[in-house]
Structure formats: C-alpha cells, structure tokens
Amino acid sequence: MTTHPMGAGTAPADSDREMIRIENVTKHFSLRHDHSLKELVFSALQKKKLADTFLALDDVDLTIRAGETVGLIGFNGSGKSTLLKTISGVLFPDQGRVLLRGRVAGLIEVGAGFHPDLSGRENVYLNGAILGMSREQIDAKFDDIVAFSEIEEFIDTDVKYYSSGMFLRLAFAVAVHTEPDIFLVDEILSVGDEPFQRKCLARIRELQEAGRTMVVVSHELDMLSELCSRIVVLRKGVVVFDGDPVEAVRVLRDS
Ligand SMILES: Nc1ncnc2c1ncn2[C@@H]1O[C@H](COP(=O)(O)OP(=O)(O)OP(=O)(O)O)[C@@H](O)[C@H]1O
Ligand SMILES: [Mg+2]
Image (cartoon, rainbow, N blue to C red):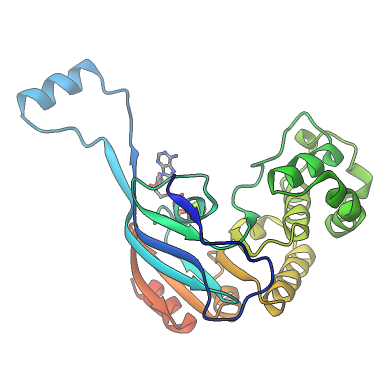
C-alpha cells in the first residue's frame, strides 16, 4: 500500500496540521500494448525501443495543510486527474507515497461509484456506503441529499437515463453530505447548469469556512483563483508553480 493514513481526526483541524503529504510521487502509464509485428520487427532492426510508457506524474512533492483550498491547474493531459486519483487512493503511485489524515471524499469522475442499472435512490445508498457512510447515516441525510440535488422527481428512475447534469447533481449532493475531512473536486462542476454551479460553489465555501481541506481541479481559472488560497500548476506531470493564485494563473496563461 502506498496510501497511508496519518492518524484519525474528523474534527476540523488547526491550520499547520498536514492533511495531505505527497512525497516524490511518480506515475507511469502504458501507452499501448498492441504493437504490430511490423512495428516490433522495425524497432528491433533499428535497435530502437518502442516508447510504451508515459510519465503522467514526475516526482511530485506537495504538502497540503488543514483548512487550505488548493487549486490544481494545467493543460489537458498534464496529470491533474491522475494526481487527484492518487490522493483518493484510486491509483497507486509507482514511486513515492501519499500520506493522508482523515477521510477523503469527492467528485473525481462523474459516474464513479454509481451503478447505471440502479435508481437514484439506490445509488445514493451505494455511493454513500462507498464513501464510508453507514445505512443509518445515509437514512438521516437522504432527504437533504435529494433536496440538494433537486431531482426528487427522478429519484426512482435508473441513473442510466439521467442527463449528465442530473448525474452530477446527485453525485455532488452525496459527496458533500459525507462530511469528509478532505474534499476533492475534479472539473465536473462545469457539467452543471449555472444555478447549480453557484449552489455547489456556495457549498464549497461553507466547507471552507468549516475548516475542511480541499483540492479543486478546474479550467475555469478566474473562478479558481478567487476560490483558492493557493494554486499548483502542473505541466507534463511536473509541478512548475505552487503559490499565489493570481500568479499561478499568469504562469499557466504565459506558458
Ligand atoms: N488509466 C490510464 N491509462 C493510460 N494513460 C492514462 C490513464 N490515465 C491517464 N492517462 C494519461 O496520463 C496523462 C495525464 O492524464 P490526466 O487525466 O491526469 O490529465 P488531466 O490533467 O486531468 O487532463 P484534463 O485537463 O484533460 O482533464 C494523459 O496523457 C493520459 O492519457
Ligand atoms: Mg482531468
């Protein structure tokens, strides 16, 4: 295991306390496995090795403290989602390690933790359980979750018939009601319509005020620089900037 808890702590912590520590994290992906015989013969003749791995995260070091809202920006394919997935434990780094304090939840991929053939209602229970809630806890919050999502009318419809926005609404509603210590959000807010985006942002601000720790990925740079206390810029899997949000956006736009 490369993801280690740093100890329990559900209470909003004093700042200074490290919530996420990413140490020298490197992640490769294989590009393809189906080289043709012709390609293999040519590469052997030319004594060239076929490039078959891709470096998605290159020696990333990052420490995030209690109560921080850290933005993660970078062009498509720069490694943002890969980094969030290593924090959430969906992916394991090839090298390095990720240390966490407390419970992590969030929205990393719309649809993750949802089953298409189950209704919205059943998926709230499934997803809540995946995020670490007991049946009683979900029972207690079910009405609030549905009210937040504003899709009461469709709660007993199979989610495979949901629009992307409806899906997002339910997923976000479940995630924010799990009261995680660390909340991760990847882009997906942009799927929601404007009123729902505003509602999500308001909820994110509430979590901020409650001292939760957040990592938010978005291409909406202005929104992000307003929301975050700090922004990290990734370029081809490398952290090229970490600090002032306005400066971070400038670094990305200038590159
Ligand atoms: N499971 C996977 N298998 C193979 N390659 C992958 C996998 N996941 C990601 N990659 C590759 O890793 C690189 C980084 O992907 P990642 O999804 O982290 O980018 P991103 O910064 O989130 O981009 P975007 O802004 O488009 O969401 C990409 O080149 C992608 O093709
Ligand atoms: Mg991504």
